[in-house]
Image 1 (cartoon, helix red, strand yellow):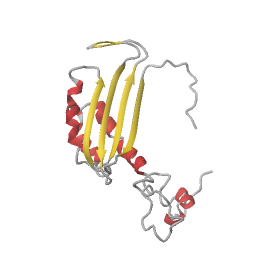
Image 2 (cartoon, rainbow, N blue to C red):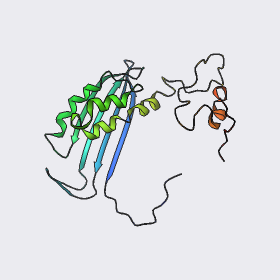
Image 3 (tube, helix red, strand yellow):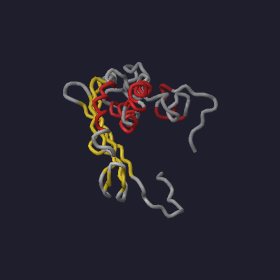
Image 4 (spheres, rainbow, N blue to C red):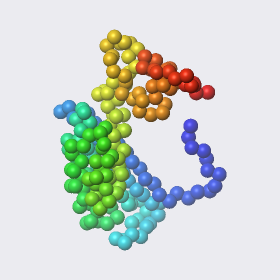
Length: 194
């Protein structure tokens, strides 16, 4: 269900777009390419000069290369449009500090420790924070088994990865009872959605 229509007249002031694409590489590794752009629908005056309507205020990219255990083995960052040219983009090589972090083990804390505040670019660091869930989505069905085992009950010994990782798929909830009955731990107060 989409958001409700606004009852007030509104004027667009800013557009931020975040895009993430995941690629399986022929060497067995995966690339997550993330990009963030910011646009104003008018000319804006910055300390560094005027940015004309239609020009990106930010156009930043971050590529992390991960192995099948979701450990970062390489990082590349670029800053194609920045508010302070000659200053903002010099931090991009520092994102190599993310190498060695695992997306599923204290990743966000590791990013904060290595790249927060003046140690990094606010926008690249913020974008890095959303990469774990994008990687899981990319791996689902290819690297991570997300099936319920209904067709191969004798072969599957571990519960699907996504169970007990969000409110809808808690193992004592009605969605698991309906879609993953083998793994359900039904509580007396579990109710089906109306």
